[in-house]
Length: 65
Image (tube, rainbow, N blue to C red):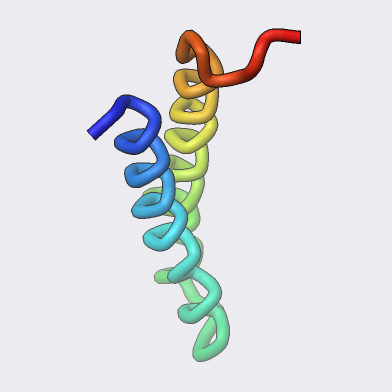
């Protein structure tokens, strides 16, 4: 698996994990939701920003202009 494919796979897993917040909020806004945001949601979205930064540095990913 290429570095790009691995990064996108990890990004998608993180996004899926972080988006479970919306399911939680549909049923109840509680301390559990806030803990999820702090401990799961924000860290995984921050990790995804790092993944995109790393993917952006892959040589040959973009055609040369």
